[in-house]
Amino acid sequence: MNNRVLGGACLLGALAADQASKFWILDIYDLPARESVPLLPVLNLTMVWNHAITFGMLGGAGAAGRIIFSVAALAIVAGLSVWLARTPRRWVAVALGMIMGGAIGNVIDRLRFGAVVDFIDAHAFGWSWPVFNIADAMIDCGVAILIIDNMRNRDAN
Image (cartoon, rainbow, N blue to C red):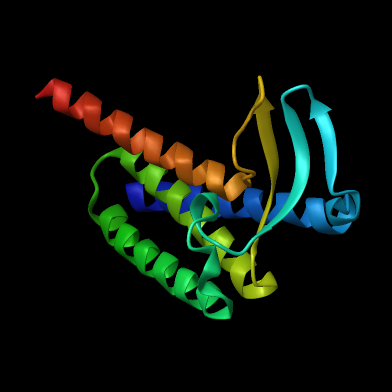
């Protein structure tokens, strides 16, 4: 399979998983009305409308923030798509597709709702990770794959 096709398939899969999960959380399960629901001792579904970027940074940007963050994310996606078109490495194509799909999923939220829909609340031993969504997980996993691939490739040389 061509790496561009593989990356594109990963982009569409990540985007579909993200948007389907958000549809379920908002329109079927109605998490906004429930606010927070414990699932496991270390996991809740907790409704958060994230008006900022990663971990709530730059949250004071106001209404212009959603446009600025969306344009920045789409510019990054454009750059990653050039990298995808040029990469000969399958795992890099997978990672780039995951990152781009996640980024586009969050842009859709910003444009549709004015904020990103976050709902996965992981916590343990008094510590809590910032609430996130499937798009964020796809971006993080894609970055992890890129780091691992880079380290393996470096060791091979």
